[in-house]
Length: 399
View 1 (cartoon, one colour):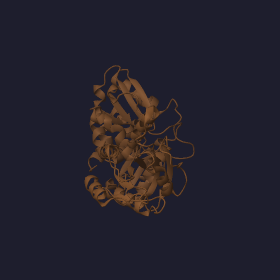
View 2 (spheres, rainbow, N blue to C red):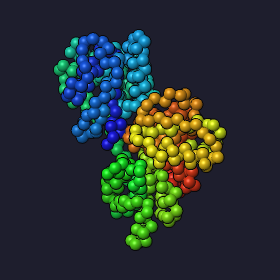
View 3 (tube, one colour):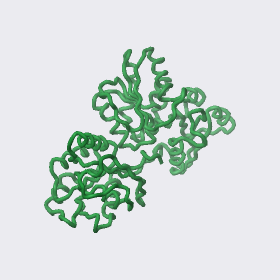
């Protein structure tokens, strides 16, 4: 699993609230510098950790939300921006203080639909009052835990994290709702200059595991082998899933009776805003000469002349429309520096290297602004005239 695809848990609070001590306690390692001086943490600190019977996570330690001065304001801004990358949050308070800073953080988390816990830290100095606990529990419908990094073990916090997350985020199968045990799924994976040496890309590996989990059979082959394989075996697969960049070629050789889609489109349904993609992709026809298009790539990689996002999709878009566009490329979770309203369209990659929450938060500003969004697979399917076929099987089921 890629680092950014792990569950991201961010620690938020004032300076000297014990966030760094708490992250050390949670991981059992001294990874964050701790002192009694307010403002010791001046940048994001990330640490991977495996929580048994739960998930691989990344804890994110942040600068105090009450930091001051010119540099302090920059650190606070970085902290607030990092919240959109988090799947869960620990809002750390002390001395029974839940005032404007904490209220703003809680409201931002609620707006992003990010589940959180309130940790009243340093209870060995000042204990949490019953009145505040009752008020916070009622207002935010979240666990409120009185804690001391000097005295307590972290089991109650970890158990609360598990409980809060699992309540609304049970693991979902990629294509399990499309399959019955024993079904055969054809996975068409070209091995070209874009393929990583000696291994498959993450979406292909995830698909194989999902098919196995659903007691089905995956057959993996390259595009050139599809015709002879089907002719020799007489197998009629329940579903064919292809790499998006060979969509056109594969659609021409696989019978229309066999449902066909792509790895990227499956991921779009699994953890993207699929309805927004379905509505936004056909708006390619509304693009105007000189429009600016934002291409969001969730992973960093070497760019070649065959790169799907940097070269092929931009070329196909301009060939299809007969217009010239300006393209901006943002890698990973780097900040989008232009106002989102500068863009006529946003096209997101499959997002296999980031979490569903990160992908949703990444695209939501564009959706809120009425800017059409699509993803690589759906854009390619549309440009090659197979959009309806590539999405039909997935839209026939609930998503």
